[in-house]
Length: 443
Ligand SMILES: Cc1cc2nc3c(=O)[nH]c(=O)nc-3n(C[C@H](O)[C@H](O)[C@H](O)COP(=O)(O)OP(=O)(O)OC[C@H]3O[C@@H](n4cnc5c(N)ncnc54)[C@H](O)[C@@H]3O)c2cc1C
Image (cartoon, rainbow, N blue to C red; front, side):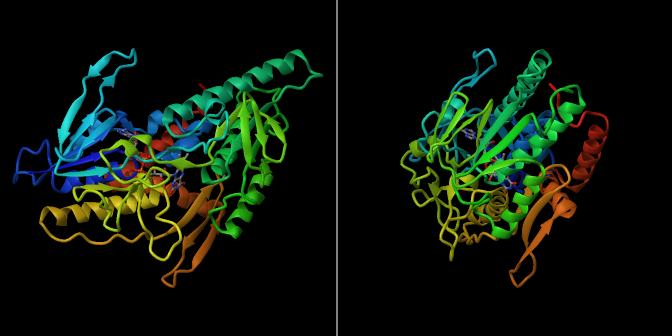
């Protein structure tokens, strides 16, 4: 049996493991022909949460526990094996990976260091926050890379609002307020700001009566580029500016952050912004471990260099996809962008390509298809540009239609992992949950 190991069960890796497990592998199959491949997924976490939902977890508009998928269950249902633990080393000559020990909540060892052998290895480790050497940024900001960070932000925001409400009761003259600064006006920063305004309104409705959700909760985005959403079209950016203004989000564009000290953001132009909470969403880089993997070639942001087959330039048995892969995008200045739609396309491509590889056939070539971008701006609004027709023209969408399309991206992810019947049941349970729970997770 051909042994395929996939490291990283995110937007791309889990889809790949599921597709390959469904088709070729089966750790649990009792009837039928023997499986062709042994598919193994490794992730440091026990559960999968689709990363584009993290800003909703941070604002409390989504309960991560209702949206997580357990890897062990997914493996059981879709014919692959799952091993939990962090990838710590690669031995290319011995074709094996090392998984570090799995520690419990009390830091005691649950599983020891393990070594697994592969015939084909696929690295899908995603990305992590890049601080670009800005002094104090890592120490004084909250990032949104993981569910834990998103939950921590939500808890700190609710605590800050509650504290401010209490202070207002005591000293009416000295009006208390909460100030939130978001560094970086990419999709994550913009989406988070809009969600936070909704959260402020809900917190006011649920008991923080003294705290005016607009007057007393200052939400601002600080961006070095001259406009927000700098990698998207000007029209989309302008539409987002208008919607953010309606939500009283303060935009500081053209302001490069030079230093962050406890509770203060300093800009290169000499401005200082005081903030109770500072979120860093200004950029990403690949996980540091990739540069330590037995000589695999990485680029300046730590991504593994792959060709258009998604195979690494260094080793014919190793592939990479998603945010951690530097994949060429012909006729474009940059490579394939680090986005969920790229991870999804590459997972689906690699499922077919690895089948051909197992049959000893040549690998096909992957070309990224940009299907457009959607940016959510709260519960009922979004803006986006979609590749509209076969002539390749972009189509601008906004409002409820765009918001519906945005929501359907996650639905499609669920359908890819679990099938359409499951997706419909998931939609139904989501509606029921929303009908019977507060609009924001309050604890
Ligand atoms: C808040 C937020 C909002 C976003 N919104 C959008 C959006 O609207 N549209 C869009 O297209 N993209 C969006 N993105 C980007 C999108 O989430 C990523 O491009 C996508 O998730 C990349 O998929 P991936 O499979 O490469 O990595 P990920 O989905 O990040 O998965 C990586 C996996 O690797 C695991 N892992 C990491 N290191 C190790 C290790 N050492 N050992 C074992 N396992 C490891 C992680 O636990 C994780 O499960 C957003 C990202 C964020 C953070």
